[in-house]
Image 1 (cartoon, rainbow, N blue to C red):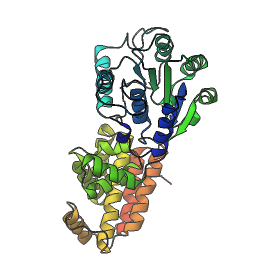
Image 2: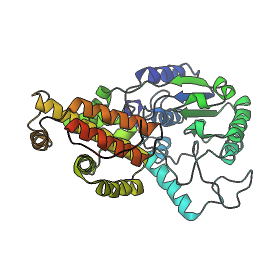
Image 3: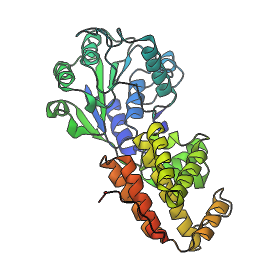
Image 4: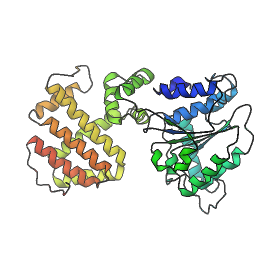
Length: 380
Protein backbone atom coordinates (compact mmCIF):
# COMPACT_ATOMS: atom_id res chain seq x y z
CA UNK A 1 0.00 0.00 0.00
CA UNK A 2 1.13 3.59 -0.70
CA UNK A 3 -0.42 7.02 -1.21
CA UNK A 4 -1.31 5.93 -4.76
CA UNK A 5 -3.61 3.25 -3.37
CA UNK A 6 -5.96 5.99 -2.16
CA UNK A 7 -8.52 6.96 -4.79
CA UNK A 8 -8.21 10.65 -5.73
CA UNK A 9 -7.86 13.02 -2.68
CA UNK A 10 -4.69 14.60 -4.16
CA UNK A 11 -5.19 17.76 -2.11
CA UNK A 12 -5.32 15.81 1.15
CA UNK A 13 -2.31 13.66 0.29
CA UNK A 14 -0.23 16.68 -0.76
CA UNK A 15 -1.09 18.46 2.49
CA UNK A 16 -0.06 15.49 4.63
CA UNK A 17 3.15 14.81 2.69
CA UNK A 18 4.16 18.47 3.01
CA UNK A 19 3.55 18.35 6.78
CA UNK A 20 5.64 15.19 7.08
CA UNK A 21 8.54 16.67 5.12
CA UNK A 22 8.49 19.85 7.24
CA UNK A 23 8.17 17.72 10.40
CA UNK A 24 5.02 19.67 11.23
CA UNK A 25 2.49 16.91 11.71
CA UNK A 26 -0.26 17.79 14.16
CA UNK A 27 -0.68 15.63 17.25
CA UNK A 28 -4.34 15.02 16.35
CA UNK A 29 -6.30 15.05 13.07
CA UNK A 30 -9.98 14.96 12.25
CA UNK A 31 -10.59 13.40 8.84
CA UNK A 32 -14.16 14.16 7.74
CA UNK A 33 -15.93 13.50 4.48
CA UNK A 34 -18.55 11.39 2.72
CA UNK A 35 -18.72 7.65 3.37
CA UNK A 36 -16.29 5.71 1.21
CA UNK A 37 -14.21 8.77 0.26
CA UNK A 38 -10.95 7.35 1.64
CA UNK A 39 -10.69 8.70 5.19
CA UNK A 40 -9.78 5.38 6.78
CA UNK A 41 -7.42 4.36 3.97
CA UNK A 42 -5.59 7.67 4.34
CA UNK A 43 -5.38 7.32 8.12
CA UNK A 44 -3.83 3.86 7.80
CA UNK A 45 -1.34 5.06 5.18
CA UNK A 46 -0.33 8.03 7.34
CA UNK A 47 0.25 5.66 10.28
CA UNK A 48 2.36 3.47 8.02
CA UNK A 49 4.45 6.40 6.74
CA UNK A 50 5.35 7.72 10.19
CA UNK A 51 6.52 4.24 11.19
CA UNK A 52 8.44 3.25 8.02
CA UNK A 53 12.16 2.67 8.72
CA UNK A 54 13.53 4.00 5.44
CA UNK A 55 11.31 6.81 4.20
CA UNK A 56 10.02 10.12 5.50
CA UNK A 57 7.05 10.80 3.24
CA UNK A 58 6.47 7.57 1.27
CA UNK A 59 6.50 4.04 2.60
CA UNK A 60 9.21 1.73 1.29
CA UNK A 61 6.96 -1.34 1.48
CA UNK A 62 9.97 -3.54 2.26
CA UNK A 63 11.05 -2.93 5.85
CA UNK A 64 9.81 -4.98 8.81
CA UNK A 65 7.60 -2.11 9.94
CA UNK A 66 5.84 -1.94 6.57
CA UNK A 67 5.40 -5.71 6.61
CA UNK A 68 3.70 -5.54 10.00
CA UNK A 69 1.28 -2.94 8.63
CA UNK A 70 0.28 -5.29 5.82
CA UNK A 71 -1.66 -7.25 8.44
CA UNK A 72 -2.34 -4.26 10.74
CA UNK A 73 -0.32 -6.03 13.42
CA UNK A 74 2.24 -3.29 14.02
CA UNK A 75 2.57 -2.56 17.76
CA UNK A 76 2.38 1.18 17.10
CA UNK A 77 -1.06 1.18 15.46
CA UNK A 78 -4.41 0.72 17.19
CA UNK A 79 -7.82 0.80 15.56
CA UNK A 80 -10.65 2.05 17.78
CA UNK A 81 -14.18 1.23 16.64
CA UNK A 82 -17.62 0.30 17.93
CA UNK A 83 -17.66 -2.78 20.16
CA UNK A 84 -20.36 -4.66 22.06
CA UNK A 85 -20.36 -4.41 25.83
CA UNK A 86 -18.97 -7.54 27.46
CA UNK A 87 -20.95 -9.49 30.05
CA UNK A 88 -20.13 -7.97 33.43
CA UNK A 89 -17.75 -5.45 31.89
CA UNK A 90 -16.69 -2.76 34.35
CA UNK A 91 -15.23 0.71 33.90
CA UNK A 92 -11.50 0.70 33.28
CA UNK A 93 -11.33 -2.89 32.01
CA UNK A 94 -9.76 -4.01 28.75
CA UNK A 95 -12.52 -3.33 26.14
CA UNK A 96 -12.42 -6.90 24.79
CA UNK A 97 -11.65 -8.81 28.01
CA UNK A 98 -15.28 -9.73 28.71
CA UNK A 99 -16.31 -10.43 25.12
CA UNK A 100 -17.10 -13.97 23.99
CA UNK A 101 -14.71 -16.03 21.87
CA UNK A 102 -17.07 -15.65 18.91
CA UNK A 103 -17.11 -11.86 19.27
CA UNK A 104 -13.33 -11.72 19.50
CA UNK A 105 -13.09 -13.94 16.41
CA UNK A 106 -15.33 -11.52 14.48
CA UNK A 107 -13.21 -8.56 15.58
CA UNK A 108 -10.03 -10.26 14.36
CA UNK A 109 -11.73 -11.13 11.08
CA UNK A 110 -12.79 -7.51 10.58
CA UNK A 111 -9.24 -6.27 11.23
CA UNK A 112 -7.89 -8.80 8.72
CA UNK A 113 -10.41 -7.59 6.14
CA UNK A 114 -9.40 -3.99 6.87
CA UNK A 115 -5.74 -4.93 6.40
CA UNK A 116 -6.47 -6.45 2.98
CA UNK A 117 -8.80 -3.63 1.96
CA UNK A 118 -8.47 -0.29 3.80
CA UNK A 119 -11.85 0.73 2.33
CA UNK A 120 -13.56 -2.16 4.13
CA UNK A 121 -16.22 -0.83 6.58
CA UNK A 122 -15.71 -2.46 10.00
CA UNK A 123 -18.95 -4.02 11.23
CA UNK A 124 -19.38 -5.86 14.55
CA UNK A 125 -22.79 -7.31 15.57
CA UNK A 126 -24.45 -5.61 18.56
CA UNK A 127 -21.88 -2.80 18.47
CA UNK A 128 -23.49 0.65 18.47
CA UNK A 129 -21.03 2.96 20.23
CA UNK A 130 -17.33 3.43 20.84
CA UNK A 131 -16.98 2.40 24.46
CA UNK A 132 -15.36 4.58 27.08
CA UNK A 133 -13.08 1.66 27.95
CA UNK A 134 -11.70 1.77 24.41
CA UNK A 135 -10.92 5.47 24.79
CA UNK A 136 -9.37 4.99 28.23
CA UNK A 137 -7.11 2.38 26.70
CA UNK A 138 -5.74 5.08 24.39
CA UNK A 139 -4.70 7.11 27.41
CA UNK A 140 -2.98 4.12 29.01
CA UNK A 141 -1.16 3.01 25.86
CA UNK A 142 -0.13 6.52 24.78
CA UNK A 143 1.83 6.88 28.01
CA UNK A 144 4.08 4.00 26.90
CA UNK A 145 7.06 4.47 24.60
CA UNK A 146 6.55 3.88 20.90
CA UNK A 147 8.08 0.82 19.25
CA UNK A 148 11.26 1.71 17.35
CA UNK A 149 11.66 5.20 15.88
CA UNK A 150 8.04 5.68 14.89
CA UNK A 151 4.91 7.06 16.53
CA UNK A 152 2.03 5.36 18.29
CA UNK A 153 -1.01 5.97 16.09
CA UNK A 154 -4.61 5.62 17.30
CA UNK A 155 -7.24 5.65 14.55
CA UNK A 156 -10.78 6.22 15.81
CA UNK A 157 -13.19 4.94 13.16
CA UNK A 158 -16.61 6.64 12.99
CA UNK A 159 -15.76 8.98 15.86
CA UNK A 160 -19.32 10.33 15.86
CA UNK A 161 -20.42 7.08 17.53
CA UNK A 162 -18.68 8.01 20.78
CA UNK A 163 -21.12 8.79 23.58
CA UNK A 164 -20.63 11.74 25.94
CA UNK A 165 -18.55 9.71 28.39
CA UNK A 166 -16.23 8.48 25.63
CA UNK A 167 -15.94 11.97 24.12
CA UNK A 168 -15.01 13.55 27.45
CA UNK A 169 -12.43 10.82 28.11
CA UNK A 170 -10.85 11.49 24.71
CA UNK A 171 -10.84 15.22 25.41
CA UNK A 172 -8.55 14.66 28.40
CA UNK A 173 -6.09 12.79 26.18
CA UNK A 174 -6.14 15.53 23.54
CA UNK A 175 -5.46 18.16 26.19
CA UNK A 176 -2.23 16.42 27.23
CA UNK A 177 -0.76 14.98 24.00
CA UNK A 178 2.38 12.85 24.06
CA UNK A 179 5.14 13.80 21.62
CA UNK A 180 5.38 10.38 19.97
CA UNK A 181 1.61 9.84 19.72
CA UNK A 182 -0.68 10.63 16.79
CA UNK A 183 -4.49 10.50 17.04
CA UNK A 184 -6.67 10.37 13.93
CA UNK A 185 -10.45 10.69 14.21
CA UNK A 186 -12.50 9.78 11.15
CA UNK A 187 -16.13 10.71 10.63
CA UNK A 188 -18.81 11.28 8.01
CA UNK A 189 -20.67 13.57 10.41
CA UNK A 190 -18.33 16.07 12.10
CA UNK A 191 -21.29 18.08 13.41
CA UNK A 192 -22.09 15.17 15.74
CA UNK A 193 -18.77 15.62 17.58
CA UNK A 194 -18.22 17.84 20.58
CA UNK A 195 -16.97 21.25 19.39
CA UNK A 196 -14.19 21.04 21.97
CA UNK A 197 -12.95 17.83 20.35
CA UNK A 198 -13.00 19.35 16.87
CA UNK A 199 -11.13 22.45 18.08
CA UNK A 200 -8.24 20.32 19.37
CA UNK A 201 -7.71 18.53 16.05
CA UNK A 202 -6.43 19.71 12.70
CA UNK A 203 -9.54 19.27 10.57
CA UNK A 204 -8.99 17.89 7.07
CA UNK A 205 -12.02 17.58 4.82
CA UNK A 206 -12.14 14.91 2.15
CA UNK A 207 -13.72 15.57 -1.24
CA UNK A 208 -16.66 13.64 -2.65
CA UNK A 209 -15.78 11.11 -5.34
CA UNK A 210 -17.56 11.71 -8.64
CA UNK A 211 -19.03 8.94 -10.77
CA UNK A 212 -16.19 9.41 -13.27
CA UNK A 213 -13.57 8.92 -10.54
CA UNK A 214 -15.33 5.77 -9.29
CA UNK A 215 -15.57 4.40 -12.85
CA UNK A 216 -11.89 5.08 -13.53
CA UNK A 217 -10.81 3.49 -10.24
CA UNK A 218 -12.90 0.35 -10.82
CA UNK A 219 -11.58 -0.07 -14.36
CA UNK A 220 -7.91 0.71 -13.76
CA UNK A 221 -7.45 -0.73 -10.27
CA UNK A 222 -9.87 -3.66 -10.33
CA UNK A 223 -10.29 -4.49 -14.01
CA UNK A 224 -14.07 -4.06 -13.95
CA UNK A 225 -15.61 -3.86 -17.46
CA UNK A 226 -16.71 -0.31 -18.45
CA UNK A 227 -20.45 -1.04 -18.55
CA UNK A 228 -20.45 -2.69 -15.12
CA UNK A 229 -18.21 0.04 -13.66
CA UNK A 230 -20.64 2.68 -14.92
CA UNK A 231 -23.62 0.89 -13.39
CA UNK A 232 -21.86 0.48 -10.04
CA UNK A 233 -20.81 4.13 -9.95
CA UNK A 234 -24.40 5.27 -10.45
CA UNK A 235 -25.50 3.09 -7.55
CA UNK A 236 -22.99 4.03 -4.86
CA UNK A 237 -23.23 7.84 -4.86
CA UNK A 238 -19.47 8.43 -4.53
CA UNK A 239 -18.88 5.66 -1.97
CA UNK A 240 -15.85 3.70 -3.21
CA UNK A 241 -16.10 1.33 -0.26
CA UNK A 242 -19.62 0.42 -1.36
CA UNK A 243 -18.47 0.12 -4.97
CA UNK A 244 -15.93 -2.55 -4.02
CA UNK A 245 -18.71 -4.62 -2.47
CA UNK A 246 -20.34 -4.87 -5.91
CA UNK A 247 -17.32 -6.51 -7.52
CA UNK A 248 -18.19 -10.05 -6.53
CA UNK A 249 -19.95 -12.55 -8.73
CA UNK A 250 -23.30 -11.87 -7.08
CA UNK A 251 -23.63 -8.45 -8.74
CA UNK A 252 -25.57 -9.79 -11.73
CA UNK A 253 -27.68 -11.93 -9.41
CA UNK A 254 -28.67 -8.81 -7.46
CA UNK A 255 -29.42 -7.00 -10.70
CA UNK A 256 -31.57 -9.86 -11.97
CA UNK A 257 -33.44 -10.04 -8.65
CA UNK A 258 -34.11 -6.30 -8.79
CA UNK A 259 -35.58 -6.59 -12.30
CA UNK A 260 -37.64 -9.65 -11.29
CA UNK A 261 -38.99 -7.75 -8.30
CA UNK A 262 -39.82 -4.84 -10.58
CA UNK A 263 -41.97 -7.21 -12.62
CA UNK A 264 -43.55 -8.52 -9.42
CA UNK A 265 -44.60 -5.02 -8.43
CA UNK A 266 -46.25 -4.59 -11.80
CA UNK A 267 -48.20 -7.81 -12.17
CA UNK A 268 -48.34 -9.86 -8.97
CA UNK A 269 -51.43 -9.84 -6.80
CA UNK A 270 -51.34 -7.96 -3.53
CA UNK A 271 -50.99 -11.28 -1.68
CA UNK A 272 -48.11 -12.37 -3.91
CA UNK A 273 -46.39 -9.01 -3.54
CA UNK A 274 -46.78 -9.06 0.24
CA UNK A 275 -45.12 -12.50 0.30
CA UNK A 276 -42.09 -11.10 -1.53
CA UNK A 277 -42.01 -8.06 0.74
CA UNK A 278 -41.88 -10.37 3.77
CA UNK A 279 -38.89 -12.10 2.19
CA UNK A 280 -37.14 -8.76 1.70
CA UNK A 281 -37.83 -7.70 5.28
CA UNK A 282 -36.31 -10.93 6.62
CA UNK A 283 -33.19 -10.99 4.42
CA UNK A 284 -32.41 -7.39 3.43
CA UNK A 285 -31.09 -4.42 5.38
CA UNK A 286 -32.11 -0.87 4.46
CA UNK A 287 -28.94 -0.25 2.37
CA UNK A 288 -29.73 -3.41 0.38
CA UNK A 289 -33.27 -2.18 -0.33
CA UNK A 290 -31.89 1.18 -1.42
CA UNK A 291 -29.48 -0.59 -3.76
CA UNK A 292 -32.34 -2.64 -5.18
CA UNK A 293 -34.30 0.54 -5.93
CA UNK A 294 -31.19 2.05 -7.55
CA UNK A 295 -30.69 -1.06 -9.68
CA UNK A 296 -34.31 -0.84 -10.83
CA UNK A 297 -33.87 2.83 -11.66
CA UNK A 298 -30.65 2.13 -13.58
CA UNK A 299 -32.38 -0.63 -15.51
CA UNK A 300 -35.29 1.62 -16.49
CA UNK A 301 -32.89 4.41 -17.44
CA UNK A 302 -30.93 2.05 -19.71
CA UNK A 303 -34.19 0.76 -21.20
CA UNK A 304 -35.28 4.32 -21.93
CA UNK A 305 -31.93 5.11 -23.58
CA UNK A 306 -32.12 1.98 -25.73
CA UNK A 307 -35.70 2.76 -26.70
CA UNK A 308 -34.57 6.20 -27.87
CA UNK A 309 -31.66 4.71 -29.80
CA UNK A 310 -28.92 6.30 -27.69
CA UNK A 311 -26.42 4.92 -25.23
CA UNK A 312 -27.02 1.30 -26.26
CA UNK A 313 -24.13 -1.17 -26.42
CA UNK A 314 -24.87 -4.38 -28.37
CA UNK A 315 -21.88 -6.04 -26.66
CA UNK A 316 -23.30 -5.36 -23.21
CA UNK A 317 -24.45 -8.44 -21.32
CA UNK A 318 -27.78 -6.69 -20.65
CA UNK A 319 -28.46 -5.61 -24.22
CA UNK A 320 -30.74 -8.48 -25.26
CA UNK A 321 -32.63 -8.43 -21.94
CA UNK A 322 -33.19 -4.68 -22.22
CA UNK A 323 -34.31 -5.05 -25.83
CA UNK A 324 -36.88 -7.66 -24.80
CA UNK A 325 -37.96 -5.52 -21.84
CA UNK A 326 -38.80 -2.46 -23.98
CA UNK A 327 -40.60 -4.66 -26.52
CA UNK A 328 -42.89 -5.84 -23.72
CA UNK A 329 -43.35 -2.32 -22.27
CA UNK A 330 -43.06 -0.02 -25.33
CA UNK A 331 -45.40 2.70 -24.04
CA UNK A 332 -44.25 2.88 -20.44
CA UNK A 333 -43.62 6.39 -19.11
CA UNK A 334 -39.97 5.64 -18.25
CA UNK A 335 -39.05 9.15 -16.96
CA UNK A 336 -41.97 9.14 -14.51
CA UNK A 337 -41.13 5.60 -13.42
CA UNK A 338 -37.55 6.70 -12.63
CA UNK A 339 -38.93 9.65 -10.65
CA UNK A 340 -41.08 7.26 -8.63
CA UNK A 341 -38.01 5.20 -7.76
CA UNK A 342 -36.18 8.36 -6.69
CA UNK A 343 -39.16 9.09 -4.47
CA UNK A 344 -38.97 5.58 -2.99
CA UNK A 345 -35.29 6.12 -2.11
CA UNK A 346 -36.19 9.44 -0.49
CA UNK A 347 -38.91 7.79 1.61
CA UNK A 348 -36.47 5.07 2.61
CA UNK A 349 -33.99 7.69 3.82
CA UNK A 350 -36.79 9.21 5.91
CA UNK A 351 -37.29 5.81 7.60
CA UNK A 352 -40.78 5.23 6.21
CA UNK A 353 -41.89 1.62 6.75
CA UNK A 354 -40.45 -0.44 3.88
CA UNK A 355 -43.63 -2.43 3.01
CA UNK A 356 -45.54 0.86 2.65
CA UNK A 357 -42.83 2.22 0.35
CA UNK A 358 -42.96 -0.87 -1.86
CA UNK A 359 -46.78 -0.89 -2.06
CA UNK A 360 -46.81 2.81 -2.90
CA UNK A 361 -44.10 2.31 -5.52
CA UNK A 362 -46.03 -0.59 -7.05
CA UNK A 363 -49.16 1.56 -7.42
CA UNK A 364 -47.21 4.40 -9.03
CA UNK A 365 -45.34 2.15 -11.46
CA UNK A 366 -48.62 0.55 -12.55
CA UNK A 367 -50.04 4.00 -13.16
CA UNK A 368 -47.08 4.90 -15.39
CA UNK A 369 -47.58 1.62 -17.24
CA UNK A 370 -51.29 2.26 -17.64
CA UNK A 371 -52.28 -0.64 -15.35
CA UNK A 372 -54.98 0.16 -12.82
CA UNK A 373 -54.18 -0.68 -9.21
CA UNK A 374 -56.58 -1.14 -6.27
CA UNK A 375 -53.72 -0.77 -3.77
CA UNK A 376 -54.13 2.00 -1.19
CA UNK A 377 -50.94 2.63 0.76
CA UNK A 378 -51.50 5.83 2.73
CA UNK A 379 -48.04 7.10 1.75
CA UNK A 380 -48.12 10.72 0.65
